[in-house]
Each structure stands twice: as C-alpha cells, then as structure tokens.
Length: 308
Ligand code: NAP
Image (cartoon, rainbow, N blue to C red; front, side, top):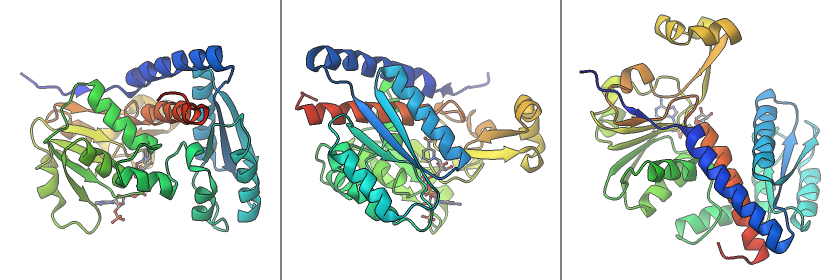
C-alpha cells in the first residue's frame, strides 16, 4: 500500500481564521463604532511587492477592515518615509502599519521599522516586538511563523517535547519560529548555510520547517518516516529551469503561465515519507495573510483597551 501524507491546506485554515476575525470585527464595530484599519506603505514598482500588497488589501476587504495602500516613489528618502510613518502613528483610524519589504538601498530599513509604534507594528518586526517575544511577553508576532504554529495546532499536531528542526535563520521566519517552538516546549535546532551535515539534523526532525529560499533543498533522503514537514519557501521556476520531473508534474502551469511555484522541499520525494506536509502553493502563503489580519485585529483591541 502506498502511504500518502496528509496535506495541510493553508487556504482552508486561513479561511477559518478570516471568518473568526470578521466576526470579531462586526462585534467591535457594533460595540465601539470603530472599524479596524490597516495601512500598507509600498515603495517603488516591484511587481512581486505589488501583488503582495494587493493580496493584503483583498484580505482586509474580506474581514471588513478599512485598508489603505500608500504608494511612494522608488527614490524616496528615509526622512520622507519617517514623516509618513509618524503621521500614521498618530492617526487614530489606523490601527496597523506595515512597510512592504524589500526597501530600496538608499532607505535605512532599520530606522524605518523602528519608527513604527510597537502597538501598530502588525508585521512584528520592531525590535520591541522581537524583544518581547524573547522575553515571553504578549506582543505582535511575525505572521509567517505564528501562522505555522496555528496550522500545527489546528491539525492537532503535538508540539510539546518534539524534535523540531528549522532550516533558515532569517529575522522574519527562522528566528521567531525557533522562539515560538521553544515557547511550545519543542526541542529546537536551527540549521543554516554553515551547518555541518544538515541531513543529520533534518533526519532527526519530528517537525521540519524549511525557510531557505532554495528549490528542492530537502530531498527524500533528508527526512525520516512520519515527519511533519512545513515548507515555507516560494521559488519561481521557469520552463527552462525545470527538470523533466517538474515539467511533467506542473505541465499545466508551464503551458498556461510559462512558470510554476515550488517550495524548498522536494515534494515528490518527501511527501511519501511525511505524515503531514504543506504544499507550495496552497500551504504557508495564505496563512501569512490570515495571521497579518489577526495581528491587525489584536492591535486594534490593544489600542481600544479591549480584552484580547
Ligand atoms: P532569507 O532571509 O532569504 O534567508 C534564508 C535562510 O536560509 C538563511 O538563514 C540561510 O542561511 C538559509 N539557507 C539558505 N540556503 C541554505 C542552504 N543551502 N542550507 C542551509 N541553509 C540555507 O529567508 P526567508 O526570508 O525566511 O525566506 C526564505 C523563503 O521563504 C523564500 O523563498 C521566501 O520567499 C519564502 N517566504 C515565504 C513566506 C510565506 O508567506 N509563505 C514568508 C516569508 C518567506 P545563512 O543565514 O547562513 O545565510
């Protein structure tokens, strides 16, 4: 009998979360006459960033938030961005502020992120938010790793006492992921490019979370039977980059769009060994937006002094 892993569907869980957020939004509007508002600042014309911002705005519409996207020129200065953020910090109709990354090189990213009031920092990238996460204090937590914890919990996957291995140590995924898993009492290992013998670690994982941005980094020989595999990576593969297996697997994508999206995990090799796995697309991606909305709701409640 061929064993097949259970797919963890990001869109399904994200839909449930959005429905919960929408319900709370109606309550807040009814009780306080306040509609949560998210403002996204988009600098420049990067096509991928534009798509991300559009999707965030669509998410806002779905749950009943007010949303605004502020477009700024590619050549904007750090000072101009700071002025804009300062204005939004004091606007009582704006409960969440998000600066879409990446920013152009002339902009001091750290100064910009640090200028957002922590209570409006719905991305959770402010050093105060990160520090509170380390100190195990309530705060706004980055959306992608908190979405992964939410996925595991909603699938009743036990985290406590498990060997959890993360590949990637980025500030937005790997590091906060490690902290969240420690808070859930997993035993956590973090791998990166200087890790010796990564397979020795990944084969030991009961929960494996991969956020490296390297297509097919994790092959079938790098995971053990029964592992829960969460693939964060999003890699665009054009027809000329694809090997024959991917060309066959994603034939429709190549015919209609000329490219496909794959994760960091070699799905065809790993899926037969995993107990649970997230597909790409259709896994972690939609969760990130759902958790951003949940963060904006939380920020609104904090600012209105409502019970969290
Ligand atoms: P990042 O800032 O691009 O950093 C990548 C991390 O992976 C680094 O820590 C790097 O190690 C490590 N790494 C790279 N190649 C490796 C290798 N061959 N072996 C071991 N470790 C390796 O990471 P990120 O921002 O977390 O993004 C990673 C991927 O996730 C990207 O594809 C991104 O598009 C995707 N992503 C998806 C979502 C979503 O919502 N689904 C959200 C965020 C990111 P070093 O530190 O040693 O360089």
